Length: 136
Length: 136
Length: 136
Length: 136
Image 1 (cartoon, each protein chain N blue to C red):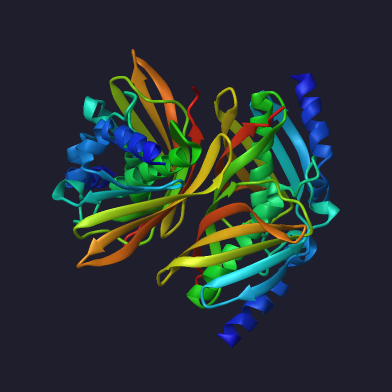
Image 2: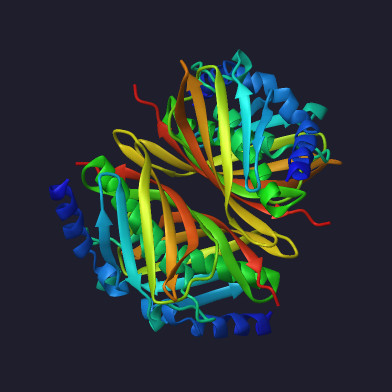
């Protein structure tokens, strides 16, 4: 698993968009991944909350990593669905995904996205999606 | 409708994240919106394709604007689902959303996201989601 | 294609649940399927409209057949999402699905479900989902 | 809550389709519902597994009841998404839904559908959807 975590970290660090948006892979396990994003002004929509597109990036990517870790290698998200529960603001977003159903070639993952506001975690969105092993 | 299009443009231009990611509202109608994004290196994932999170941003935001135009004012996307069909690369992404079902307080929208590669449009992803009118 | 349509019909007729609920495969094409369901009292929910579960069955199964026809053989729906637009009642439900994105092993399909009330088609629900080729 | 559980049971028993398909409301709580379905031959698809449409009915309806209980009254499912994890067979299906995010007018719910085979619970599908309070 240490090798797989290192592999995940290496892939994450080679994603230009994840660097551009300011995200970090802050956790990984055999079927789990956590991505964190310090919130700054450039992540906002017109009312000062975090843009839904930032949250959907977190859902997409955290699901990809949880599924890839569960499948043991290169993988990609083929689809997902997200429900926004509360507007997000504060200092940090944390997305945690878990591969709930794992087969040979695909993993179905669930993801929760939290905002940290005044030291308190608030659940902002939940997502569910499919990760498929990349063709070799 | 001209007023509503101007209102949409004004909202779009006040979204810091849309500016940050480099998107433009390139079309609007009574139930429709189009957002375009010139692709650059910072939008990529680890294999040189556009990151899924960029495409999910386009789905989220284009659905929001199509639904908001159909509902006639401030609105937000409460949920959506996206299927990725092909890896996206090339010079430009274009997302087009249409409000297929419009009620008093919510609009259900469908969105297609195309990449322009070598002058040809390729369908990269399709999405479907719900926009709700913002409380006044 | 005639062979494939005949194959589709044969599979449909060997689905006990489709017989039980009263559905019929009323159309098929290289990437398309249509399933119809004459509405009766047993399909209702507590307010006299068609139960959402009946409509979700139509989405699930019509997507399966459109995807299976596009993939050329045995297939199953791995996931779908449905938005209900209007309560359904009347004499008949008609679901039409189309495989929008077709790869070697999976097809992404879109489906519209209509009710026929007083001779008029009303769009009741839209769905989007993934069909995967069954392992041989 | 006892009143609300009784109200839920009364609504469930007035759903002709739930009676027709053979389902029972077997649990309810302030944000939770459980619906069970003894499996019989008429629920099958062409390979002898439970038809996806039966499982999607369970997802739809269990989400409706969990959301309605959380919102405190009449409610309807406006949309949901389901991922099938394993083919379902055995003696019984049990669907359990929980309202994860509850607002004034809508509740976002998650649902797990299990089959009981040889006395063992197997997770067959997971779903996520939105319930809205019915207009008074």
